[in-house]
Length: 386
Image (cartoon, rainbow, N blue to C red; front, side):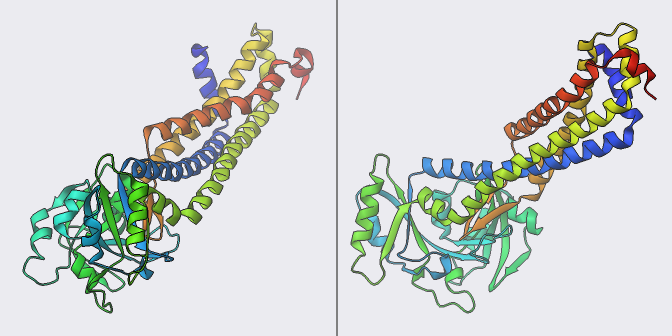
């Protein structure tokens, strides 16, 4: 069948305007399909990673957005005395938007001495000592390390000042992580976020992250922490980090699930486009198919030729759409977030292969009926067709 590839390509090129429009339409549909798939993949990747980590988040009870949670910082000493707790990290959080957004900027204020113990990342630009040592003089330092995705999205580089809202930081380094969501955060000094302009947060933090020893009972420790502060100045709500983030992303997760239907609609669009083009092609070439059968082509071979045209159109569109989507996703560092939790748009080889398979199968299904019609053409009436 491969020896007829030049014939198939010449046939498609003969009606190049129609073929190119079909390919571009298919590419657009597959492009959107890959974007929707990248969001789903990012959400699943975030949940899987957090489930594997043994960490808890202590938050103020009955609060939601980080801007509304204020815990006494000295809670960390009491939590550190609980059996099974490995490390306690007070964190001040600042975000430019608590609602769902494609450009959420999240600042985490953490002591540099604890940051490297609780986060797994690698600086690709800048210097860790510059960030770590600037706060040792007793003055509040505005040095920060920025995730690669944020740096790409906001065009930030080492040494530059970056401002948003009441926060202005000097970029001491840009980091990368094997967790795509992690690259959407900016880490600053804890005391700097506490003392930022317009805020009086010294002695309080937004949340406390608790890392557990291997084998520790997370449910028991959650209950123990909340019981400890039930009668204190501020009540707490303690949850595993994965559960906490899932709740923060609750509304967003529902929107992402609904977006799945958009992906299905894109598959339907590829089917409709390729099927329409195949039907038009068959109607325009009734005589040609009759001539092919006259010179010895079987109905089965005509069926395969028409089907091949359909698959080529859909697959070409799929290749273009997948390549465009993967390139933009990789370079843009897009992420969607809510309540200071971000989900990275995650491109991957499995997603790219899925997009290609979907486009190829769509072309196969779309071409069946037009190919069947062409294969069953009656030779004599078709030759008389004007």
